[in-house]
Image (cartoon, rainbow, N blue to C red; front, side, top):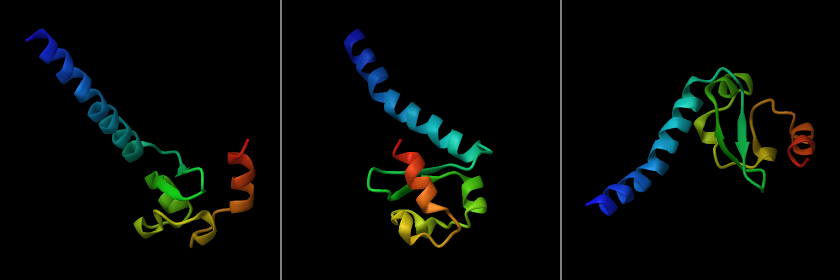
Length: 81
């Protein structure tokens, strides 16, 4: 039984981390954009949605395709450091 209990705890850790991140994203007051190595927008915080005039339709788009007012060349130089 003890091994089963440890396995269950280990299985719950990714879910708990995911829940904690979702809580952070929902409640932060900081504008943040999360892009992958190819500069594709993967996630953004609610303040970033307002600040950069984003919509859920912008997820999955390359930074060059953004309809908002994101200063992409500056962001690209900063994120590559």
